[in-house]
Structures are given as C-alpha cells and as structure tokens.
Length: 98
Image (tube, rainbow, N blue to C red; front, side, top):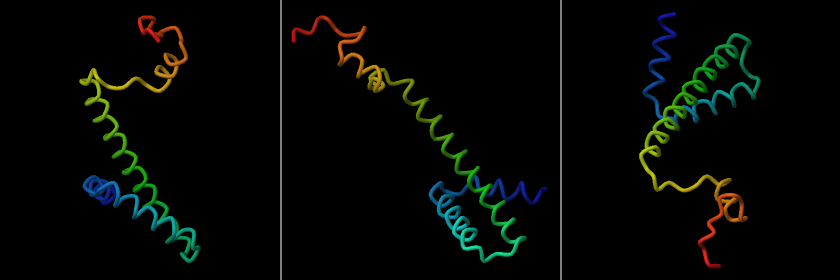
C-alpha cells in the first residue's frame, strides 16, 4: 500500500498535459489488445490513477479560477442572464432610449 501511495504522490508533481498524454498511451495499449490479462489489469490501474490525478488537477484549477473571479465585480454576465436581458426579459433596462 505504501508503494501505491508513493505513486499517487508522484503524480501530484506531473503536469496536466503529461498526465493526459500518458493516459492516452495507456488507452492505446489497452485498445491494441496485445497485453496479457495481468499486464492489462496493471495498465488499467495505471490509467485509473492517471485519470484521477488529471481530474484532481482540473478541480484545483477550477477552484482557483472561482476564487479569482469572486474578487472581480466586472466579470461578464452568464450567457443566460445576458440573453434574457437582450430579449427584453424581466431584468431589461427600461432607461435605454432605443
């Protein structure tokens, strides 16, 4: 178990793009069907670890963006609100002369 924890920790330092490239390689290996059952299981386990690490990296990036955007009051309206205003919805600005 300690060995697996070391592998997980090692993935924390790998760039997102490298994780995706390696995951793509694992998928290609599995799709080629040239591995033994044991090799396939090990490759699949590696792929799951890579996918989880990549997903964790994306989650952290999303959290950072959310924190940055919370401090910016000039952020654009979400598409739905902007579209509603453009259609003259309930939040339409009546002060616009045209």
